[in-house]
Length: 342
Image (cartoon, rainbow, N blue to C red):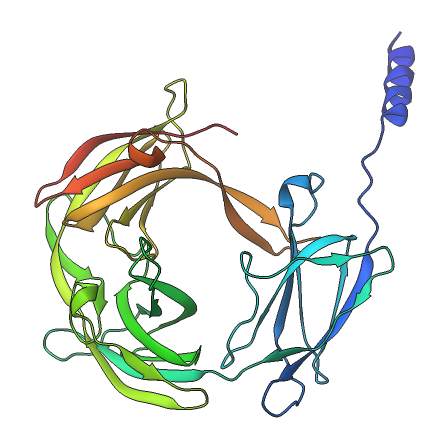
């Protein structure tokens, strides 16, 4: 009987359809300096699936490669529609998931037209405390004023840097134009406290909490704007705590609760990961925040050990599918967020 059962299981396994990974085709191209027409070495080229929802299960959503000494890159990808992104330190990035027309890669692969990157400008400076002491491990971001009616007051341009042990930062590859500089603690570095404690808060150059008071910095291609010193501000922070549950009311462990300040700026939110009982806590300055919960999903980049993190869609209670949290000089507890199970 045991032998018969084992034979039957083996036969069923052999008859089960196996999901074959799609065949790949080769994509090649070059990346050049727009001004000198010289090849750019070590530029990172990424192809992202334009329609990820249609991708077979287990298929990487992006492939990336670096250019060689001749500025040439080579990628093996399944046929389909892709968005392309190219980045190199000191140069203005090209392409985005929202602004680039998709490329169609056919069954024979493709040799893509040359991609030319423009050299950007540079902003250099220091981050200091109120006594003039240097502050390491602060995140510095360049923001472009946004003139779209109803949109955020400023948006990041994809250029950021971390201060070194001397409090120095260098933002390279900034496009030509006028920019704000925002300094804040690295997201996730703030630890929830049992009572209000003063801590560093997001500050605009030269030393303002509000964007409306901040100074703009002129940047031109190939040039460096230096001596940009930012005096970061301190303010009390207050604990925001609560629980993340699914639609049946069960606690969700490992979810990411993110509080984004309602101040017209798109920057990294304050985040906390839920515990086994679904609870979370983090510390934020006084202000109004939108709270949303998401589940991180690990996406493998292929047969290697590299991986990336994305977030599954979620729904929450409250205005615009988000919970609005007002912090006004006191801790806030008992916040409840409902996340959509996937």
